[in-house]
Image (cartoon, rainbow over all chains, first blue to last red; front, side, top):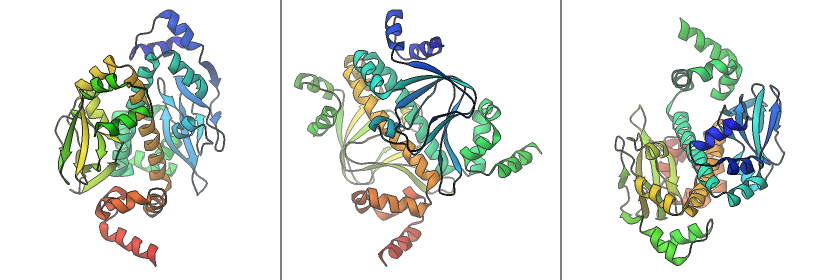
Length: 191
Length: 191
């Protein structure tokens, strides 16, 4: 399982086997069941999660009591509530497994130590955050620019495997649709 | 002017005077007039901008032909179209000065060289992107969770100086309001 992480690291930095062995000691690997929560609202956000296999999602409960999904993380993607993680504060989010998943976990203190022991990892996380930031800027543009229907069209076109893989009620929650409305749009698309 | 950047760097990394002198050689300082464009739609996004003094905004022209502001950058904030910058691609955004501003500019190639010559700067930019990413995740939550009116309330409460400083028609553009509608809300708030 660590090899999946090694492959991701190798895209950004060069790490030898001995260094990699030391680096992996900062992490643990956990298995999570479908719908298992890794983080719940009100808890201090202690960990940063890297998906080795499976899929996680982040959501909050809105003022109507409805789960609003704001983010998915599939293989090779990091996920946490970054503000709460950096400041070690209680979160207003949930992080939950969409599928049975294998997750690499690092705690905040361990990540700080890792970065000071291996400055190369600064470069790795610089890339991780840079790309995540760029993606979220594009997401913000879409939220302004597209109707929900257009956003769904865009998702189907650009990430068809993702749309196939994620249960429809979660895609609906991500788009801010009701599941019934998404089902109508899908019918219209097929006809 | 470089001292403003030095103060920002010192928050994240320790740099001595000699290193700082070498680092500043990678940047240039430019003065921009109010409403001057630093980047226009269709141009390759070559530069990353750090606001020393003043304010920049990023916007795109939506399909109704209206400017939609997605981001502001005031003092000590970096701004660019990150996807287009990293890949050196044409942008779909404009970056424009809201006020007369002093801007520190680095080009993509120079930033890459800087990072390889000064690994400490990996740490600096890791923090820059990490915080920007965390802020944009919170922004995405607000876009889902708040009505436009609530978002404006939030802005007035959390960043009153910002709301005072930025022209109202740009605040309206950022919130997705018409300027007339914002003016109505402000009247309601005062009464």
